[in-house]
Image 1 (cartoon, rainbow, N blue to C red):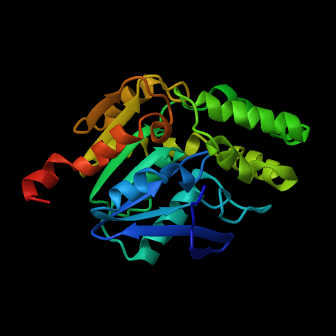
Image 2 (image 1 turned 120 degrees about the vertical axis):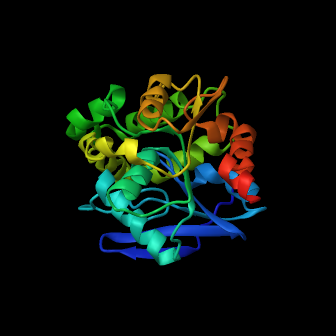
Length: 278
């Protein structure tokens, strides 16, 4: 399955790899964990018909560098994202973010003080009490998970990935998501990044959510088992001008469960865009 990231961005802790498609007003796609920009393989080409679409792998993920000692907390990801926006010379892009990409996008907006034209968050970590379930076990018992036999680690990751989709993966997709986390180096990288993602990094900006003034759209899968609907409602209460849309019969991975519906929302634009004739 062909998905290439031909460009590189140097950070003090390794190289981030990124790509770009299309032409027109810029839009940036931000993935979460334990995924990569491969999630956008259907969405990016659809958006590229009318937009310049930027996508990348977070440091420690996908095809970006993985190594011991990397800072892979949400604050570090936000600093890296802010650096990428400066590197791309994008002062006000549209931003679309999923899973922990939502927290990265919000922290970049509110703490790193980078401006966006508009922001779409779907099935996203944003704030509140989201350290739960398997994620909490990863945090509390990192050293145990790091010692799992390779077969047990791969089975756990595969099961975790399947839990995120309501309709299941198409052939070859699960293997593509598993690839960066296989082998001794991949297993170490998987638990390295999970052990550094902390609720404290979203608590730091929660008090600023009410001051978000750009257009914001929230999209959520009704059957999301990773971040159930209450997390969408929590965020909507704190950014009250935000649009909130539900996608039925879809789970956490709208890119897999409802790519056409998600693409339609992203290509329709915001009401302010339509009023401006964009």
